[in-house]
Amino acid sequence: MKIMAVDVGSSRTGLAICDKLEMLASPLTVLNEKNFDICISMTAEAAKVNHAEMIVVGLPKHMNNDIGEKAKLCMEFAEKLRSLVSVPVEMWDERCTTVIAHNYLNNTNTRGKKRKAVVDAVAATLILESYLGYRKNSGKFH
View (spheres, rainbow, N blue to C red):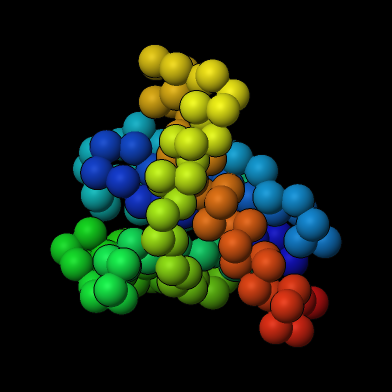
């Protein structure tokens, strides 16, 4: 199943997608859109263009498992996205993915504008890899 992951941000939103066999998660793009509703529409369009069969939206819970303002925003994003697409939209815990993405980019010496341009797509890829691992280990893989 082709699954698209979304790392919602206030200025940039990262997208990643996997192959039909759910083996490889790859960065797709970064949407540089600050308008919440336009960003949701752009995400829905990206899902359609890339033939996504499911969308996973990152849920940035606090380390103590609380839901903060950012997580509530992501939940609203997912809810509005559901009304624009005909595929399932699920939430997935994304704690620490942006930190891990920054560490990865440090290790690859990606700096400056190039780093800013890709960090959100890398974070979306990490969200997707985590979700794919869950599907594989829980027997939900199709």
